[in-house]
Each structure stands twice: as C-alpha cells, then as structure tokens.
Amino acid sequence: MPQYDYLVVGAGLFGSIFAYEANKIGKKVLVIDKRNHIGGNCYTEPYEDYYIHKYGPHIFHTSLKYVWEYINQFATFNNFTLRNKANINNKIYSLPINLNTIQQVWPEAYNPQNAINKINQDKLNISDPQNFEEYCLSTMGKTLYEMFFYGYTKKQWGREPKSLPASIAKRIPIRLNYNDRYYSDADIYEGIPVEGYTAIFEKLLKDIEVHLSCDYFKDKFYFDTLAEKIVYTGPIDRLFEYKHGDLEYRTLTHKHHEINSDFQGTALVTYPSLNIEWTRIIQHKYFAFSKSEKDYITFEYSKEYNKNFAEEPFYPINDFNNNERYEKYRQEADKEKNLIIGGRLGNYKYYDMDKTIVNALDVCKKELAGK
Ligand code: FAD
Image 1 (cartoon, rainbow, N blue to C red):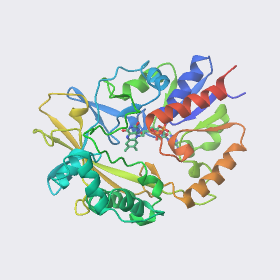
Image 2: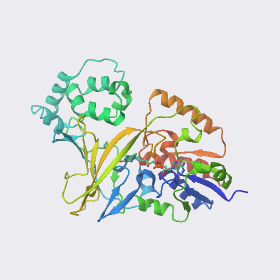
Image 3: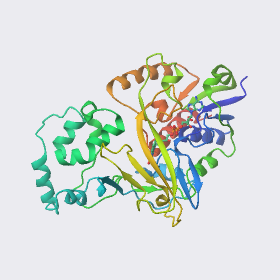
Image 4: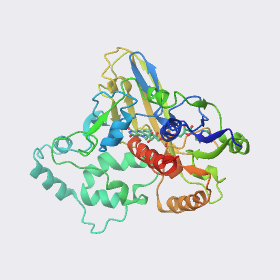
C-alpha cells in the first residue's frame, strides 16, 4: 500500500494548489521540487523593504472574479498597474502602443483620426496575412512594426517574425486613445502581493510535506512506488523520455545588479532594438511602491532552451510542429490512469498565473470531488 495518496512533482503554482486542495480534504500528499525553493517561476526573495522576482517580473492580472477571490485567500495585493515603457536609442516610448506612442512617432497624429490616417498610409495591403510580420504590416504599418516589434520579436523568439504564426501578433493591442495600461480592460483585477509571491506558497504548503532539491527523474521508479497517483507539472516530453521528439522552449537568463541610484524610474522597460542584447530591464522596487534608496535591477535575455544545460524551459514555442508533437505526448499521458498532468509545462501552453489557477482548480474538481 503506497504511503501517500498523491506525489506532486513541482512546487510551482499548479502543484501547490493541487497539494493544498487535496490536503484540505484529508488526502496524504508529498510534494517534491528539483529546485531549492518553493514557488516555481513565481518565486520572490526579500530585499530591503520589497521583493525580487527571481525568474522575471510577475504581475498578477485577471478578469475572473473567482480566481481573484481564490488567490486573495493567501495574499493581500497592492494596486500596482503595469504601464510598460520602451527604450529605443534612449528615447522612452509608452507601450503598448497608444495615442501617446503614436504621437511620439508622428507629432501630427495627436488625435485618433490623425493617428488612423497615419497608420493607414503606412499599412501594407495584405488581404490574408500568413505570419506574424504580414499581420503587423497589414494592421499597424511598417514604421510601428519596425520600431517596436521586429527586433523585439526576433530577440524574444530567436526566429524571423516571418516564420512565426500570425496568431501571436493578434494579441498585440494598438490603442487609438491615451490608455497606456499594459493589460486589457477586461482584466479588472491586477496587483502584486505585498508580502511577495513566496509567502503565498508558504501558506499553500503549510501543512504539507515538501522535499526540495529533489529531482523526480533521479529515481522515478522509487518515487512512483510512494503514492497512488502522480501529479506531474514538469515538461511533458521529459516524462516520456522524448520518445516523440523534443518540444522546443525558449529560456531566459537574468543578470542581477544592486545599485544605489534610481535606474529607470519605473518597473519595466522593454528594449526592442536588435543592437541591444537584452529584452527588458526590471527595477523591482517599483512593483512595491518602495522608497528604498537601494535598487535592485535585472537585465533579461532570451535564448533557445537546451535540455542538456542547467536551464529552465520558460516559454513553449507553440508552432505547428511542436503542437503536433505535444498532442502525441498528451495522448500517451491520457492512457495512464494514475497520472495527472498539469500546469504550464505539463500542458505545453503559455499560461499566465490566473490561467494556471483555472487549470489547477479544474483538475482538482475533477480529481478530488466526492473523495
Ligand atoms: P512552474 O512555475 O514552472 O512550476 C513547475 C515546478 O516543477 C518548478 O518549480 C520545477 O522546478 C518543478 N519541476 C520540474 N521538473 C521537475 C522534476 N523532474 N522533479 C522535481 N520538480 C520538477 N504570469 C502572470 O500572470 N503574470 C506575469 O507577469 C508573468 N510573468 C512571467 C514571466 C516569466 C519570465 C515567466 C517564465 C512566466 C511568467 N508568468 C506570468 C507565468 C507564471 O510564471 C506561470 O503561470 C506559473 O508559474 C505556472 O506555474 P506552474 O506550476 O505551471 O509551473
């Protein structure tokens, strides 16, 4: 008889919510994570009177009331609202593109109608755009595309934008008003947990046995004997020993610096130009409205993930080939009745935190209801 009802592989958001909900109804749960901390990519560390987002900036945002209420059981959020900036040759533009940005590019485009006229003059007539680049050229025009998206997309995905699906570009807002909020108006809930993200995970995992620096694949056979069911939140291709081929991911590297001056006056600045290596710079104190004079900044670089190096697979590359390969793994996983797969890497989807919570609560409902 196995010792535990569930072995949860991964103390990230999906795994921790599953563990919390299972424990709440009296199930015996063991959580393991190969990292030396809980929280997965949401992990934050205290610094001065604010928190460092170690794996890249995390802003909680959602349109879903039940998700907001769920996460608020474990945290109090401040009212941070992301207003991104872009640095192009040391000129600062407002991002996402709004009337302010358009007017910075074309001074005569100071009202919505003039902005539409300018964009229309600049647009290429492509009736059925087939890729990211064609979609941008046919909607925002050449100037805005080349300034804000060509270089950034190439750096972020390591591919020519022509080879990326148009669907990625469809998410880019071009606003013909002065609304410079990064997220859509549908996301009525937004903020940063005032005690950092790690505190959320401490509460979720408070009554649960957790083993850190513990890699499931170091001894999969042994771990599988420990529990009735395995809840796996790592990369799905790794679970099946890459038998249908590798899924591709992008990873990030972060270079952190402590400084004694206010570096950029805001939380997040994007660098779209190809001649700058990094994609973004994060100044963490601005997520917490801190007045600290000690500043902590992080340069973010994007690169191809290589499973042979000690890297984290951050972003799935959801092109046709990868999605097809993922489906094969999914079918394989669905055949195993003692296996539950979830989260961003398990589902090979770019889930924001709210979508990860939706995924976790859906799985909990299916798995735990009536038990
Ligand atoms: P993860 O956080 O990846 O957790 C999986 C865990 O499994 C990890 O801790 C890993 O170490 C562990 N694991 C994997 N393999 C093994 C193994 N073999 N043995 C043991 N443990 C294993 N969302 C937002 O809503 N807003 C944002 O601003 C935002 N910014 C982001 C910025 C970046 C750079 C990234 C990468 C993501 C961002 N997200 C953001 C998304 C957010 O991080 C995810 O929604 C969330 O972390 C997903 O949780 P998860 O549990 O699925 O995955």
